[in-house]
Image 1 (cartoon, one colour):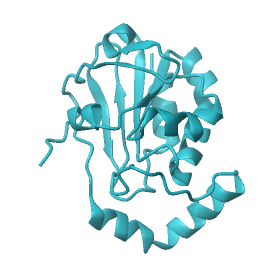
Image 2 (cartoon, rainbow, N blue to C red):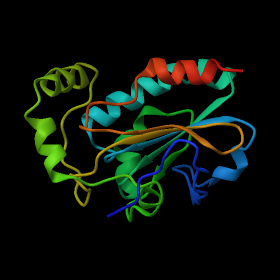
Image 3 (tube, one colour):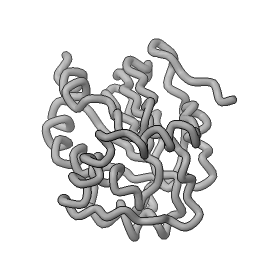
Length: 184
């Protein structure tokens, strides 16, 4: 079983390459607040709707000193074909071997996926995703049972908010991210 992180832990360091081929190291963001968003896969309609919402808030967050990095347990080609089409103003990371997911203790749970599917809120969320242009799509080679997680990290590299979703759809409230971004 993967060890989950706790608020107050140092954020695990990583080095990788984003969807544009640029090197991304967590250390390069020291002195700024961070949101690390771990999504299921790049074709996930619910994940793409969430990313759309992050993109819409990003200019304000960036101005307040908050940067975002989004991770997808997807091959690079899928990342470009799906999530990459949104032209995110922040790094998108393909992590098909779940190396960074494991570093952050992001879980896999068939039981939670099944609970999400039977949840009435999920039907509404899927309708919202489809209305925004994100269709339910199967991504070959993706991990269908990955559960999203989000982490807010302070300027010193310390985890301040750790949010492991209970279901696919119970993301960290955007208002929580807004409050964190606005803190001086």
